Image (cartoon, rainbow over all chains, first blue to last red; front, side):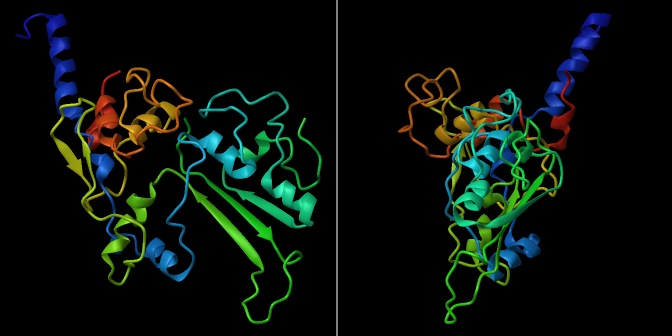
Length: 129
Length: 152
């Protein structure tokens, strides 16, 4: 069956497909029992837990970040879509609080971020250009 | 899309705007934590079981939730929720707009007629959350870690 070099390669390829891609989809329905994640479940019990919420955008990272920051993704549907030149034009929720209520705020980020994609991120009031 | 664990923290100092009410605890700060790429039910859904780390009041899982294995209308095979999640997800679940629409509405993106998969402005589709398994199967995903090594 695997007599020629070409067919050997084909066989190996088929074996990889067979053994490595089960296509069972089973991972999608696997959850953690609460005792296996005791820290986050304890946090949930001791503090507030949002267990009824709605996604503004059924999709990926960047548009979701824009929604949580500013209530719109300005038409972005997926991470990787182009960001408008100069940044998203809409004002962030926090900036609106600052303007209308005089509240101060600060944003901390661990890695690359979202906030820099809007013009109105800055504590120092200056638009990003 | 980028799926490395990322975290955004916003701290809103709310001391200025709220009137003093000595009968209630005064909230000085609200901290919002955004943690990506784990579903609520995946992390906390089985808190409904109660026990020392659970709480039966949580709007989580009944344990009876199942998804059909494929998009086929006559599909009879199902995959149901269980508490056997691996410590690490064996693959990076696709959560593009297209894949998420498939998962929510059990339709094939760009294929299923008269559904949110072909009419993005249609918001009254059957948002049954029944397409997670079928969408993953259509993408060749399996529970085995080996799925990562599929040949290019």
